[in-house]
Length: 422
Image 1: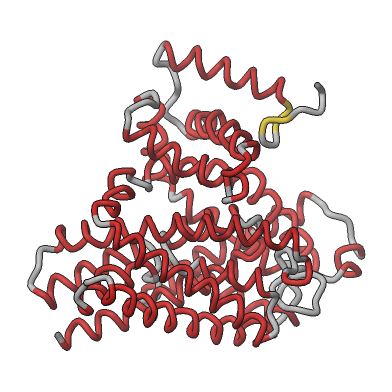
Image 2: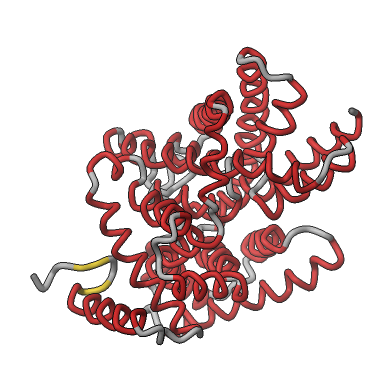
């Protein structure tokens, strides 16, 4: 019994947390502050993650992510979660930018600890695989949509493009603004049409990541289990580099400080270059890594920063995303015309298949390449988090950010440029 855990907690400690939460919730005494919000997120996310791990069929399809992210969305829709808890989570997610904390820590932690040689080898290969996957996804998706009776213009702009546009804030929102100006439509009506495709694309990507992970467990020759470049044993620093010095708390704190410093600098640079903050963070980390500017102590500390972020933050964030950023009514709206589901499924399937074989052609591990490419479908940063968690490949987050941010920006620019011609 002592070995039983709920998530990363011993079950005795979780039961104390749960009992305290129930008492406070029944008496409307949960504090609406940082510790209160984290406590609520821990209560629900850890038990739902544990349930997802043990449901046979759902487990194969990336079960813990499906349960932790999409079940809360349904529970909020049915008003089956305590109102006080939902309000606390919504305010926490809205006011703290918790997702940005996760993205910055995971990108810095995984990329700074990455082998410089692996980073250089992978950069051009990812771009080639990504562009090929997106082009083929657009072509095949539009062909299938036309065969199902959709107008080509509507299929391209309102079904296929939103899936690969980089999420809601950096994808669906700028598309809705551009489309409303180009087509003379209400921005609200356009946004309402785009949003269901964004969320459904993310859901399909999560399912595929779970299936690809299962395939990797059976065919070890097709995956590096989170190592992207073939013929390398790890994305991270060599074993010698990590063993030269012990892992100390000050090294981890230094890595976290580096992450915050890069975030501050990215906000400053955004004013001058106009790129979204996550892209600037990614470019800065790539630059300082390639230029070999990071001391070994911080490289070692970034390993522990990455592990902490994946273990402690990701389950809480997934539940928060499900409660406050995944509206159930938008997710199920797409089922009003099942042909849309077929088109979306075709687009994501094409991206995954092309990503798989482009990985083989460019020297990437096929399954890891396919999972990274699938991150360009759906909900942007939140979608990448869910997809990588379902595929158990969280160390691929820097590459997923390339897929989401750069791939999404290219698709948005293409769609808005073409919209002006119509």
